[in-house]
Picture 1 (cartoon, rainbow, N blue to C red):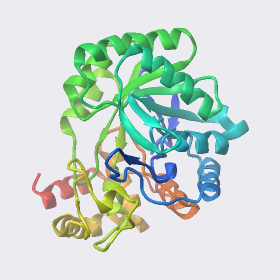
Picture 2: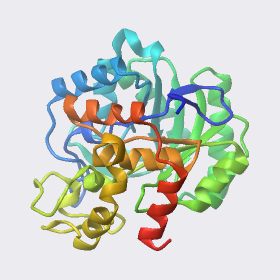
Picture 3: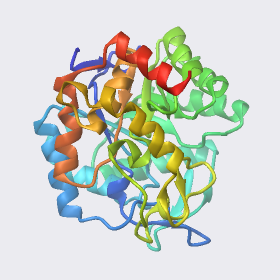
Length: 326
């Protein structure tokens, strides 16, 4: 496998594996007190993990202004330091939050907010440009999205961003952004248990990169089993959109059963379960860039170790579909 992939038609080269920086934002919540993070973090360990990933060839880091209410961007900026030019940084906008109380307070799809949010992200990331700027409102109105797409083209002309994308699971919405010259990708959910054939087809037709969030099914494909989760972890009180988890008990038993049925294929070639899940995504499309989360050096090393093992074979891909009845 090529260890690098191109972000759509932008020409921007990234490692075939990116790192998602949601978890390192630490604890944050909505106005009802619902946890939106992954629990407590050690910021120094997060910084070490990012730097270790860089040493292992990972050059793509995906965050959002709202992760940890600004904290994830600050940690990523601190970790990259002088190595900023060696990496591709993606962040997102559209949510409104209180950084002091670490609370998500709403969302704002106005062009004025987009510019304010970008200015604030650049400051937290300690950089003067963002490589990939992504709309974080998955169900935004398509007409407003067209306006924001055109604004992103302005940001490109001003040198504030290099390319842009929409984080959405709706191919019709993603197609609106795809009409823009500097749209490079769509970020969407995809993993071996949750295929996204329409989105993969759109990426192929429109020349976009497919950035895969939840590539490890929120930890289930990294071996997360049943059992209580800490109170500040979003999976302990899963919102409606978060599949595979039940309140108080951790993983859903039927998800665990499907993972067990796939275990032999995914752990072939000396892979860990998580590495096999990433290998499935690389085999699924030459445009995929999975972005698993991490909170430790050990997780960073395991995820980065998947690159050398490469994708599953076409035969294994077909066998996965057969087992899952697809």
